[in-house]
Amino acid sequence: MRITILTIFPEIMESYWHSPVIQRCIDKELLSLKTVDIKEYAKGSFRHIDDSPYGGGAGMILKCQPVIDALRENQHDNSHVIGLVPIGKPFTQKKAHELSGKEDLILISGHYEGMDARIYDECDELISVGDYILTGGEIPAMILVDSVARLLEGALRKESTEEESFEDGLLEYPQYTKPREFEGKKVPEVLLTGDHEKIRKWRLKQSLLITKNNRPDLFAKRKLKKEEEELINDK
Image (cartoon, rainbow, N blue to C red; front, side, top):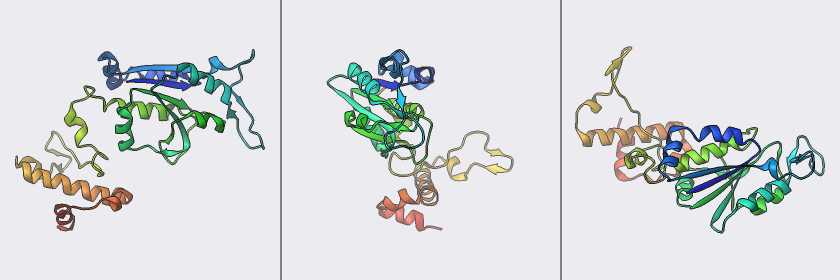
């Protein structure tokens, strides 16, 4: 997979490529990463990349010309272009799986008060990483790269990604390691039994309860199986 990030702060992105999982993907040639400095495509001696919005308003807007020129010079026939902006559709684990199957991704990192809307016309889709405001799209780009890269075959052991939060629509069950007791808090006895079926049911029940309490929106979407109904109702 090839991922290209268009940004006005390439130094922020490049420092992140040395994190363990990303570096492993690069070393195994599962992933190729490139950062493109939008400022290099700005015209004029001062290379302005932003301007005030037509119609008035606070803040500065990222101009369309340098962004679109940067995009078109780095775009390929199979490129899937994503604008990382607050108005985009929410990023989910399902979307991460979908994007992990792409050969070429180009991520446009917004900044300032926003981007000229004509940039959106160049995108295949717009994505938001959450209902909050950041100073730029660099962190969202890192989030997307991280979540997609770890799904590439060979990046992690397959088992490491199968029972994680959001993979099956539920949040992950609690996990414990040594010591068995710490400051009076003990590891649940069921995890020490060696009974795999009991452990499976306990973990499923905990996932259901945690999802119901912490993410009722996710729980409401789930069509419970008979076993799940019995577990959630078992006091």
